Length: 71
Image (cartoon, rainbow, N blue to C red; front, side, top):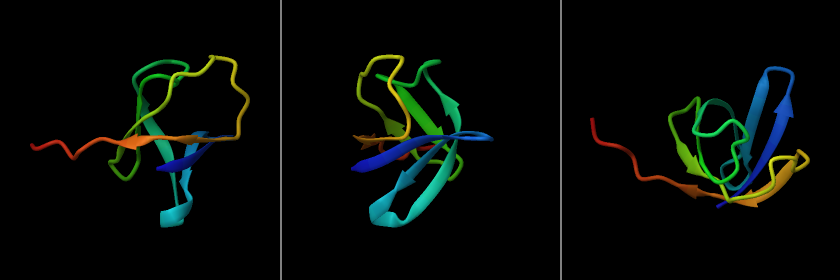
């Protein structure tokens, strides 16, 4: 799915245009986020593409939503 990643005064945020959804990033696998996963406040976990650590934000990328984990 296409998402937009941007920096806000409160931290990283992800916008999903098809869902008209914007959620803050609450956890991330890697410090620079690229090539790892991020967890959004709503519980979604998204796999982000590998990109350079100095990639300018905001940027639109193709991300993959992980299947919901069974508890």
